[in-house]
Image (tube, rainbow, N blue to C red; front, top):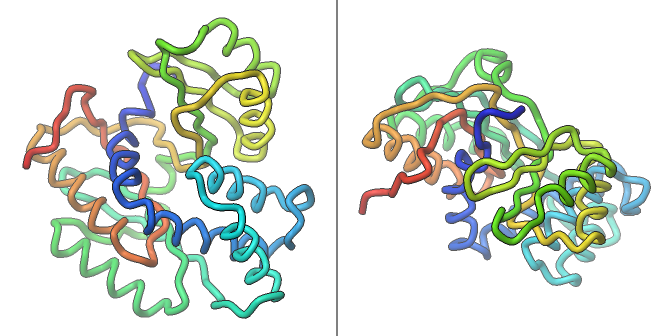
Length: 247
């Protein structure tokens, strides 16, 4: 997994996340509700729920919000039933997109995603046309200047991480999705404070574009993530470390 910084491909997304905390809470609540509905409300017996709760805590979501979402999923409180949808698409410049959604209306979501893509120079792709370029992994990111790399490296591998790399100003810990929770908790208990942590689709290789086209792709991703039904968008766009979004 080494050789290219995965952090650079999601740092723009993190900036958007920080600016839209209320909307992010809504999306995480959906994830918790679905996880609890599918696997029950007990964290230890439901790995998917445990992973989402870790994500919620990393986003500083209040405990009451988490518990209420779990109860909606288990049926203890009335709630909406969501369906999971996955779309594969191309953005300008041939960039691959993996779009994950949770919705109570499949037709509405499909129409919205198609409209956003077409208005921004993108298009839906056939099933399998893009997904083969991605793998689902846990990604835990640390600021290198605040971390002893050797100590983190040893602790992460001992906890079950697949790889640890230092790329520029960031250290990235890659895990299997099933080991993400254990690795993250072990590192937190070891005193390592992460910059970000989540399970996401990571590309095997990335596409390099001119800055103008990079900006077009990022605007498209922003429009997709602004949609209430879209949970996440992964891309294989290489965002240069010194790239700045034009006004």
